[in-house]
Image (cartoon, rainbow, N blue to C red):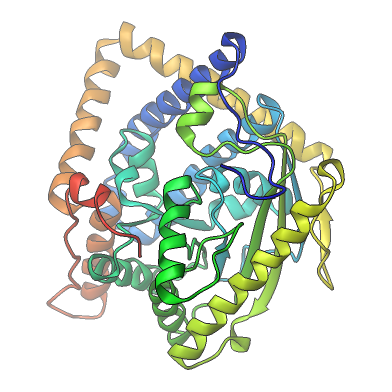
Length: 411
C-alpha cells in the first residue's frame, strides 16, 4: 500500500511486457554465472601471490559487469534516473546512507552513480541481506567484489562487519560504502513492524521512511572515523515519480519498471558528525525525521513536476552522449560474450568441465570459508602478516548458514 501522494505499486502486466522481465533475469543470471566462472576463476591463484592486485582487478571487472544491468534499466525498461545534488568523488573513501523504499534502490542507484562518474561503479561497496550471497553466479560475483552481507542482527554481524571494514582500511584503496540504516526496504510487512515499534517507543509513525536502526550505523561510523578512513558522509534520498516496483521478484515477474526515479545527494564532512555515540545516534534519528518531511514535500508535488531541492553547490547530472554510447557498448559486450560462453558450454567439452569445476570451487569456498570475500581476506591477512614478520594471521569469523541468514532480525 502506497503512502499519501506516492505513485501506485505496479501490478501484473500483459504477457508481452512480462517476457521482458524474464529475459532480463535470465541474462543477468547467465552473464554473472559464466562471467565469474570463465573470467574470475583463472585469476584465483593471484589471491595467494598478490591479494592487493587481485582486489584492484576484481573491483574493475565487477564494476564493468555492474554497468550492464544499470544500463539495461534505462535502455530496455525505459527508466530515467534523475540525480541532483553534490558530486560523489570516487577517490575519497566515504559512507553513503539512503532511505530504502524498494529492494531495487541499489540497482537504480548504479545508474545514478554512472551519471555522476562511471568510476564510482568500481569503488562502491553495498551492504546487502546475507541470503543474497548464496545466489549462484551473481552471489559469487558480489562476494568477489567484497560486498557486505549482513543478517541485520548486530550480535551476529559485528564480527564479520569488523573483518570487512578492517580489510577496506588495510588494503589501501578508497571505497564508498552504501548503508541502509532502516535495515530493510519499506514493504508492507516492514512498515507494519515500524508502526508497532513507533507505538511501543512513543514515536511518530512515518509515512515515507522507516525508523532507522542506529546501532550498526554508529558502529561503522565510529570504526571508520577512528581509522581516519572516511572524509565524508553522503546523505541520499530516493523518490519515485510515476510508479513503484517493490522487489526484484516483481520486476522479473511483471517486466515493468518505474520510469522516473529521483535521487538527491548531500555531502556532509565526517567531522561535522557528533563524536559521542548517543549524540550520533540522535543525529541519525533527526536526519530521518527531516528525510520524512523532504519526501512529504516531494510527493505533494504534481507527479510530472516532482523533483528534490537542489543543494547549495549541487548539480543536475545528465548522461552525456559518450557515456550513453559506452553503456550500449557494454551491453553489447556482455550479450556477445554471454551467448558465446553458453554455446561453448554445450558444444565444447573442455568448457563444460571447466565451468562445472569452477562452480564446485566456489561452492567449496563458500562452505569452508563462509564466502569468497572471507577467503580473500584471510589470504590478504596472511600475506600482510608475512610481510610484517608476524607468525599469526588475523582470523576471519565464520558465516552462518543460509537458513540462519534469512531468519535473522534487522540490524
